[in-house]
Structure formats: C-alpha cells, structure tokens
Image 1 (cartoon, rainbow, N blue to C red):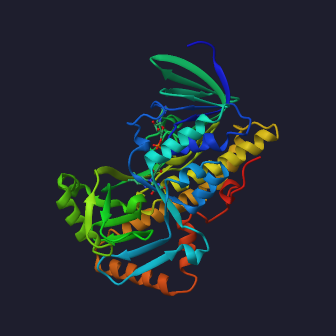
Image 2 (image 1 turned 180 degrees about the vertical axis):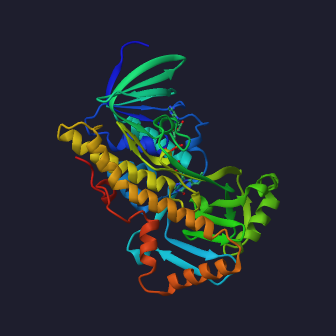
Image 3 (image 1 turned 30 degrees about the vertical axis):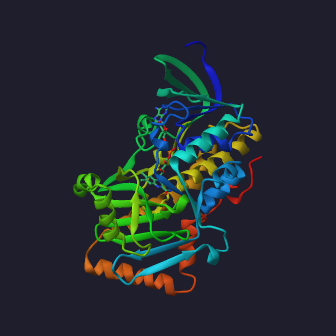
Length: 409
Ligand SMILES: Cc1cc2nc3c(=O)[nH]c(=O)nc-3n(C[C@H](O)[C@H](O)[C@H](O)COP(=O)(O)OP(=O)(O)OC[C@H]3O[C@@H](n4cnc5c(N)ncnc54)[C@H](O)[C@@H]3O)c2cc1C
C-alpha cells in the first residue's frame, strides 16, 4: 500500500481490552488506530463468543465514565450476593452488595453482547481509525517512534506511531517479538462453559463452589438463566463434552447440588483450556503490553477482563495527561509511570487467582479442613470479608480516575 500513515497511538487487538482502551481515549485528541484480525462484528470472533463475563463493580464505574454503561446496563444482570462454599463441607462465606453499600457487586453479560456494545461505541468516535480485518505482522522500535507493518487483503501497509499497545491476547505475537520473559503454566484443567435454567429463581446470587475435582461457578443471567463455569481435569474433558443434555444436567447437578432446585435446561457447551501466563515486564521501549497479553488468568474468580480494564484505565490516564501537557506519550519515563502503577496489582491478582484455583482443587483432607476453617472464619470475623469483597469488586489499590467514575481531561 501507499504512503506511511502516522498516528499517536496504535492498538493491536480489538478484543475487550483493546476496544475499551480506544473508547477510553475517544475525546483525548490523540490520532488513534486500532488493528484487529477479525472483521468488525464477525460472528466467529473468539473474543466475543457466548461465554458469560462477570463485570466487577469497578469495571462498571469505568464503563460509566467512558459512556459505555447505558447500552450495557440493559443487557446486564446484577450480582447482589456472592456465595462461596466447599461442596459437601461446612465452610462457606457470603459477600453482599448491601453490606458493601453498593447496588450490585458486579454484573453479568455475554462476551458477544459486550462486543456489540464496544463496537457500536467505537463507531461513534471519528478520531479512531479501525483497520480490520488486518494483522500486525511485525514492528520496529526506532527509538523516537515505532514502525508497524500491517497486512490487509494480502497487501502490506506501514504505520508509524509514538506508542504501540499490544492488546493482542494471551498468545500475543507482539509480546513474543519484544522477547519479554513470561511465567507460564498449564493447570491440566479446562473450563466447560454453558448456561442452565434452574427450577428456582437465582435471586441474583453468584455461587463459587469448590469441589474435589476443581471449582464450579454459577452466575446469574437474564431470563432466570445461570452461566456455568465448570472446571474439569483434562482427562475428563472429552467425556464431559460428549454428555447429552440430560446426562450433562444430572452430572452438573451432582457436582453443584440442589440449592437452586433441579436444573431443567442447558445450552450449548464450549471448553477453554486453562493456563496462567504473566509477563514479567509490561513495557519495553515504546511498547506497552496490556490485558490478556500481559496476564492470562484461571477464570474461576472472574478477574481476567476486570484486571485488564484497570490496565486500560491507568494507561489511558497516563497517556492523556502526558499528551495534554505536550509530552511524548511513548517516552520511557512516561511508560515507566504506567508500569510502576500496575505491576503490583497484576502480580497480586495473578498469584491470588492461582492460589485459589490450586487450593480449592486439592482433595487432601488437611487442605480441605484448612480451607473450610478459612471460609468459616471469613464469614464470622467482623471486617474479614470486606477486603475480599473489595477485591471481587476490583476496588483495591490506587484507583485510576475512570475507575472513580471521573472522565479524563
Ligand atoms: C471461560 C472463561 C470465562 C471468563 N470469565 C471472565 C469473567 O467472568 N470476568 C472477567 O473479568 N474475565 C473473564 N474471563 C477472561 C476474559 O475473557 C479475558 O480476560 C478477556 O477476554 C481478555 O481480553 P483481551 O482483549 O486482552 O484479549 P483477547 O480477547 O484475546 O483479544 C485479543 C484480540 O487481538 C486480536 N489479535 C491478535 N493478534 C493480532 C494481530 N497480530 N493483529 C491484529 N489483531 C490481533 C485477536 O483477533 C483478538 O480480537 C474469562 C475467560 C474464559 C476463558
């Protein structure tokens, strides 16, 4: 293709995180390009499939500040309580929106619905160029700018920018080209995801239930359905996916119990292999790595996107303030501010999610006893639950402006 196009910032990846970053900077005056491999609205886009996503209270606040929330609110089912228990044992604890003084601890939408809303919002922004379907093939950090090579319809095109943002997901090719060291392991588990309709109303309660073969989550959805995230060992995956509807319902009923009565209907099943990945650096030169590209988590605590959107809020705040002051948004000292802000929380959430997934998949009696005592103590000790609830709501640590509901600028 022809002459090199120049931007302030180029975002690679139009999944939830890349799209949210583009929207956050809509009124900043930056020249922005977002490059996405799938065509806008493509049904086959895996980032926006039918899995349910629990959006924490803090995420809602960011979406309120960026104007996304009104369209999303109509589609989202509130979570008013979270019930955490160990299946068949005495330990449990309950987190409640009323106790935390908020209308809901979080909301549940499908990734597909979220994708439609984000796409619609991106289309409102004339300063954003969405280049899709197109792939970033390579880039070169030239010191004072980054040159990006993009393939679209079999043709190559070059872009230049001050700052390149890798929001290209867990298998990020940008992160790999940066040669950033990563911490990575497989859990030997997969998440089987579907939705079910129970005989009793869900009453906006989310359940996190820990079983000997791994954790199970049930999230309230619209139309009295519940989203299921059922963690199974890899050697059980094929047989679980092969179950017909009735057999699946009774196997899941046996796993979850009868707290919501009998399970009546089940939707299509999909499976996701579970692994943890954490980049040890989220900034190198003029490139920032965010969202799943920087940290891919076990979905049991529903923290992946919620952590990613806090990266978005922090990066947008740093970039916006540097740009308004006439500074260089890709300069090392400015990106170091972003990295310093986010690294502790990224590490803590990744480690806590990993510990939860391992502790609560462990059938050893001593471990089981310890975790049940822990849950019980959490429920009984005044003040012990509050930090857990704040963490689930994405409200720990230094909050970016957007997470406080304050627009940029
Ligand atoms: C079963 C399951 C349940 C989950 N539940 C929750 C939940 O309840 N709450 C929560 O917060 N999180 C949840 N998550 C995590 C959440 O889905 C992810 O954190 C989130 O989707 C990550 O978004 P992302 O934009 O960083 O990455 P991705 O969604 O992977 O997007 C990356 C995008 O980059 C594009 N791309 C890649 N390479 C290139 C390239 N070279 N050029 C151009 N484009 C490129 C891809 O096409 C893609 O669109 C769950 C995950 C799973 C698997």
